[in-house]
Structures are given as structure tokens and as C-alpha cells.
Image (tube, rainbow, N blue to C red; front, side, top):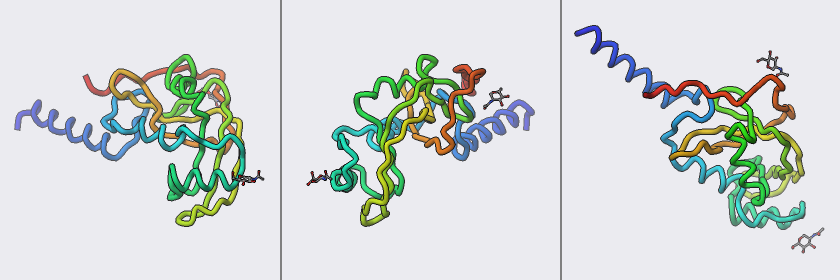
Length: 170
Ligand SMILES: *[C@@H]1O[C@H](CO)[C@@H](O)[C@H](O)[C@H]1NC(C)=O
Ligand SMILES: *[C@@H]1O[C@H](CO)[C@@H](O)[C@H](O)[C@H]1NC(C)=O
């Protein structure tokens, strides 16, 4: 086999393996997970979230809107949608690690823990933290596709900037 052809086959193989098994190693890489942003919005910034921390209202909400198969769910306020989208840009975010960005500002959101299956509420907490979101390019925009959670309450590193790795595909 000609060396060039072998190299080409190897490269394609590595590219496919990378896309299939690994998380992108920098934010804002092209993605073929087209539904990622819509899923993020449905899971983490849906319309109609209760305005209080009332347990009955939150149980009804997750039962009818988001389901309770995920035992921990965090909900941002729909009025913050534009600012949440900006976390995936230099305006609102900084590069964190892998394909994750961390927000420059902190956000208030509600984290609901529930019993899988029954939706029985274990806790409802209001949190105020910097967001850590996975960001990928869908169409022409770099958009959030995953809410990572920030249990250690990390803040953007003063030295970090919003930097993009060179795209892997040409
Ligand atoms: C919680 O909401 C339910 C349904 O809207 C209401 O009946 C109940 O009084 C509320 N509980 C509290 C503590 O406000
Ligand atoms: C901030 O980033 C610098 C350079 O990457 C690193 O050496 C330092 O440990 C980071 N600090 C924190 C608090 O993450």
C-alpha cells in the first residue's frame, strides 16, 4: 500500500475514533450532535419553571416537563437565556478544560434532587455559582450542549482567556 494512502486511512480511523469515543478537547469544535443545544434548553432552561422553591410545584413541573430519570437537575431562569448562550463566547465565558467553558459572571439557578421513578423530591436548592458548560459549534454558532455542574464552586481562572484550539478538520 502506498504510504500516503495508509496514512490517509489511519488518519480517518483516528478521526472517527476521536469523534465517537472522546469528548472534544476544546470548546467550540464542530459537532454532529445537532440536537445538543435543544436538549440543553429542554433540560436546563425550559419555560414555565416555578418562581418559588415550593416542593409541590417543582414535583409537578418535573413530572410533566422534564421527567425524573435524572436524579439531579439544575434549572436556569429563561430570562437568562441570552447570557447563558454567551458563556460559549469570549463575551461571557472563559475556556475551562476539555470542551468546557466557565462563565465570567455567576448565575442563580435551582437544583432539584429527586427519586428516580417516583419523582419524590429530596431537595430543592437555590444556587449562585459560575456555570460550567460544554460548548460546541452547531450551524454557525457556538452553543451550550451540556451543563457540567460545579460542585467545587470553581471560578474563572484569572489567567484563562477564551481560547480555541485550531479546528481538527479542514
Ligand atoms: C405550594 O404550592 C401548592 C400548589 O400551588 C400550594 O397549594 C401550597 O400551599 C404551596 N405551599 C407553600 C408552603 O407555599
Ligand atoms: C490558573 O491557570 C494557570 C495556568 O493554566 C494554572 O497554573 C493555575 O493553577 C490555575 N489556577 C487555578 C486556581 O485554577
